[in-house]
Image (cartoon, rainbow, N blue to C red; front, side):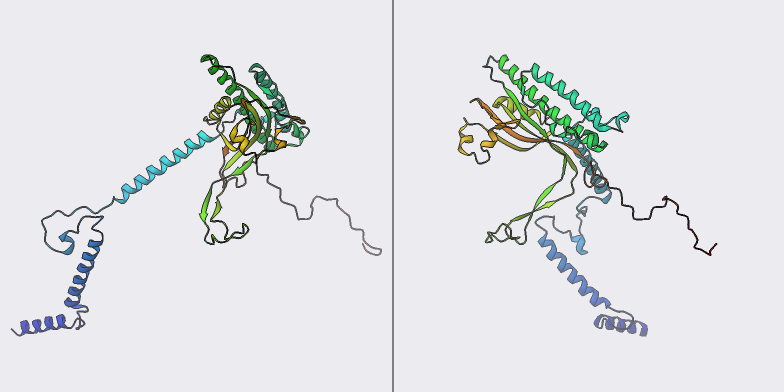
Length: 377
């Protein structure tokens, strides 16, 4: 009986005084903590009741015959598998998009092994070959080309100084120039066949006034980031608070091969040309586009971007271009694309690596023999 009495006394003391002897916290503190946790859980459940099911009584430690629902979400292994699958599909989609947008360059744009010592000569040979082939094609299609050198006149005499990188870069430029001229020819032929097949008046016309390949350049993605210093009251364009957005440039991964051109054609033929440049394998990015016709009301309304100099023949500044009422003048810049790894080629496919300057004394110089002074041996 005494033992039971003392046990009851100790239990009462532990309940009333949580810090009593060997029972830190005690039952009362635990009960209070449980009550508080249930209250917090009830409050949280009310907040999330709009999005989730009500909390089960089992979560409060109460008896219920309702089955406990599975926790929301998916197992980590399942999420990992889904992420891996999605990542693989995304990589395949990127490769597909790159292959669709990449210009398919033929084998002849690479300098053969036999011409590695003099790649400029190989380029000159391919230039003459392509010029003769194109001249035959545009003559047969009745397409006028006012620049038989197809824009490569300025490189005459520089071929022998080129290395393999420069030669292959210009070979790609030559291919794109050839592709654009070929597309112009096919566009005119396609429109001509369409008009004949439907009994329409023959209006298909294409004149290639100039084709000017330019040096390749790199480009990459850009994004507009809100300018934290933007102030709509600032009117000075030089102020950092003038722009509402700042342009963020990422690492370039695209090598562009631009070609500037000036065309004179009818609208239907030019629409066919624009459609053809979007085809896989010959995808061309239209970088700039200006269209002029003295007979179109919209064009006559605003000529701010065209002046008298734009009506001059670029091949002969003494001549003025004559535009018929059914024709338009098109000044545009189109570029073929290839892709590179910015980690491997941070400055593009044709980065010139300069050799390090030697700062050490030469070791293979002429040997100078020391002549002893008089009296020395």
